[in-house]
Image: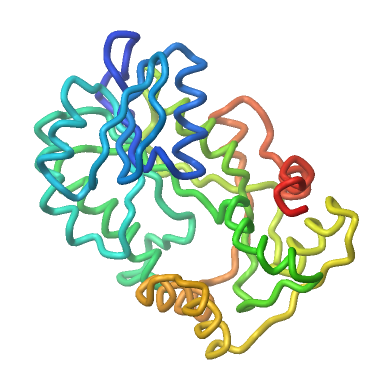
Length: 290
C-alpha cells in the first residue's frame, strides 16, 4: 500500500468536515478543534460556529456549495449522505480541482473480490471508493464497521418497555464512533498516511441480542431482543417516518449482508489506544436511554 501524496491541513489551512452535524462529524470537529486545527463544517443543517470553526450550510451534492466549502482547504473528511453514488460524478471535479487530501468514510462490509456487493448500502460505498480513485484523488479509506451510535434508534422502544424489536441482522464487530473519529483525525492531521483501506472494528463480534443485553446491563434492566419478520420491520420503519428508499436499503442489508467474521487492530494502530467495547459505549451513554 502506498501513502497519500497530499500534505495535511495546518493551523492556517482549514480542514473541511462534511456531515458535520451528525454523530461522527461532531466528534471529529471537536477533536480537530482540541488539536488546534481550523475547521470548516459543511452540512445541510446549521452548525454552531465557535473559535476555530466556520460553517457552510448547504448540500454536498451541489457543485457551487462544495466549491465554496473547498476554498483554501487542505484536507477533507468525506461522509457521503446518499443511497446513490451517481450524484458524486457532478461534484468530484470540484474535489479534484481543489486537490485536498480526502479521507473517505466507507464500509467494512465491502468485499473487494465481489463484482457486486451484498446490499445497496455497501454498493454505494464501493462505488464511491472507485469514483474517488478514478478522479485521481487517491483517498485515505477508512472502512468502518457498524457504529455503536446506531443503537440510539432504539431509544423510543426502550422508553416504552424492555423489548427491542427489529430485523435480526448479521452479527457485526460494532465500533465506537469515538474510535472512528479518533482514526479520522489521525488521518486528517498526519503529514503522510497510508491510504488503506483501514478496516475499523470493535474488539468483538456481536449479534443484535448481544447488544441489547449489554445495553440492558448498563441500564440495570433485563432487556431482550425480539426478531420480527421483514414485512413487519418495513411497516414499523415506514411508520416511524423513515424515507422509503432508506427502509428498502436497510431491509436489503438485513437480508443479505454477511456476518462479520473478524476484528482488526486498526483502531489501536491508528489511534494509539485499544478499540472500546460496546459495553463501555453503553455505560458511557446510558443516560440517553433513561
